[in-house]
Amino acid sequence: MRHSVAATDPSTGLKLYCGFYTTLAGRHLNPNTANLRGLCLIRSLVIAGQFAAVFYAESQLGWLLPYVTLKLLLSALSGFALFSWWRSYQSWPVTDVELFIHLCVDTLGFSAVLYFSGGANNPFISYLLVPLCISAATLPWAYTWLLGALGFGAYSFLLFNFIPLEALAPNHHQHGDTPNTHILGMWANFFVSAVLITYFVFKMARSLRQRETELANSREHRLQDEQLLAVASLAAGTAHELGTPLSTMKIILEDLAEQSFDDETHADLATLNQQLDHCRDILTTLVGTARDLSSDNSLSVPAPEYLAKLQERWQVLRPDCNIHSKISPTLADTILTLDGTVSQAVLNLLSNGADASNKDLCLEIFTEGQYLIFAISDRGPGLSSEQAAMMCKAFVSSKGKGRGLGLFLSNATANRYGGELRWRQRDGGGSRVELCLPTTKVIA
Image (cartoon, rainbow, N blue to C red; front, side):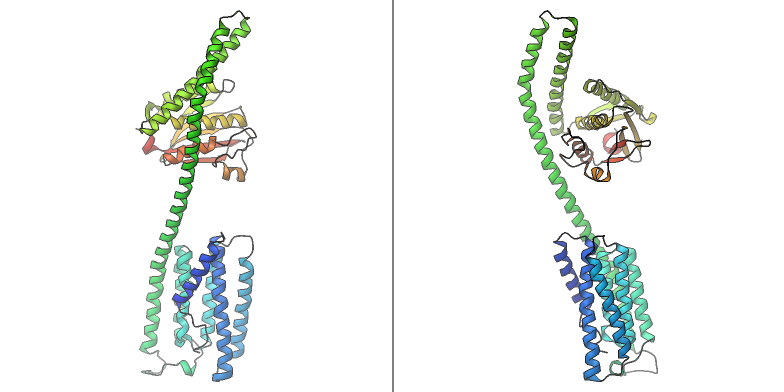
């Protein structure tokens, strides 16, 4: 039946689908939801064309066809199309498996229509390539090969099993009931086209998706760099401004220390003097780290010594909070090559853990696979799934008094080394945050 389907060849259907997908993608829909809506649009147009062709063949051409069966079949496909439209507007996401099932239904449903209207002799049998094109452009490799096998199997079945239609029967060079050379050539062409579409269209679509992912990651990293630059500029300005008041307080403390006070007051003054010296050391380290980063300099130090310096700095920062530290025996003779941002990242993570709970705070350094890992564990309340997803964003904090920069800066340090920041629930309650750095970049 020449008018049994809408006059849509595979390339036209794919162009229509891609145009619809582009429009929906601009509305920030889930990709598979946009894919399903594009498929629903094509399906609706094809079903409408098939209905029109059936009524035209019945009323104008007078072809002998099982019209009641065809109308019931098209009605069932219409019901499925309405369900698909409804489904595409639901809140739960469309999965790859679900989209694959929709494409299989289209392939089988259209094959059933062809069975009652001339089988492989129907020139619109090439429409079976349209679902395959869509699958190659949107679904993983395995689904596309399965759909290609299904389409080729349906074509092969319709080559020998169908309700004949005299108007479409190729009588030239026909020998008995054997398909002629033209029909066999169409069958072979379908097989070649299906293999090429499955392979090359999938490859091109995957390359485009990878490119889009890379561009999205590049935009995210550029935004993160801009945020880091803003924080660094603010830190440099603050360090410069703090120099004067710190010097003033240092002079006042020295004057007070020369006056007569009781022993307790002198002890307090000594503590204040120590903390001021520590503040000046922090500012000096900040300037030195910035200078080292600008000249791409790193410090090489044995791993046990690096851990000891971390503990010393931590005790000065938080004298009221002890940590249990442990280093893997395999790192006993290992030289670490790190810049100042790594130790600051570890201290930030320790500070977050201490704020959550200053009991049973642990720091472990070990290697796992291709990573050197700094693991900080606490016994705090942990994080919800929403907080864990947002923990590396700037100025986002689960602590009312937090500034939301510790995890952000630690994650930026991990990214700069090509590593990552991981979070998981700690056994027995609490959180475990792991700063993972590639061993190829940090171990000499």
